[in-house]
Image 1 (cartoon, rainbow, N blue to C red):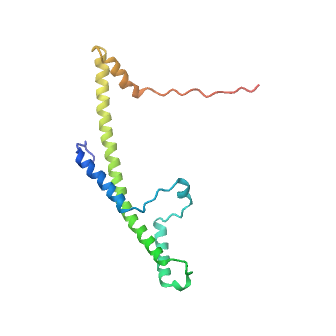
Image 2 (cartoon, rainbow, N blue to C red):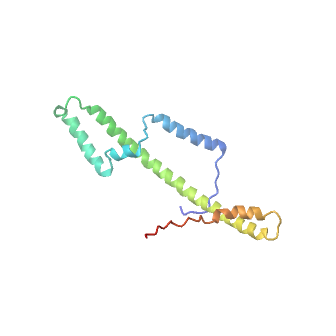
Image 3 (tube, rainbow, N blue to C red):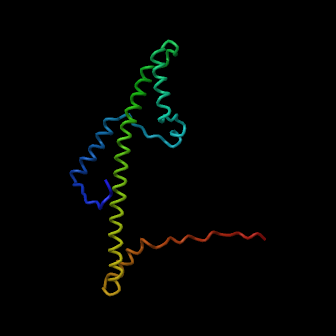
Length: 158
């Protein structure tokens, strides 16, 4: 569907239900973890190319348990693989939803910003003749003031 001006709203009850759905999702997945940047860097990454490798390895492990050490838990490997496959499927849906929310936020934010600019233009114009609007016009204008950076210090070599 092509983008058009967005007219929508969420009632307080809708917002609460959505937040409750988030809580339900988190409650259904109590095993979720949060990794540090360092932890993420150190871990093996299983992307699309690795999926076939892991799948074949799993089949090999299940078919050849006798070549693996007794400490190797094939059943845990199966559970890890199944959870990874399930989470991958869920992640795709979440990414699609996140993209839609992000795109909608960008579009509606742009609409709000466009309306704000129109109001600002009218306030600036009216402030020239209408008492009490100068401060408001200046306050709105603060959004467009450039941040002046300090010039870099130069050192002279004698």
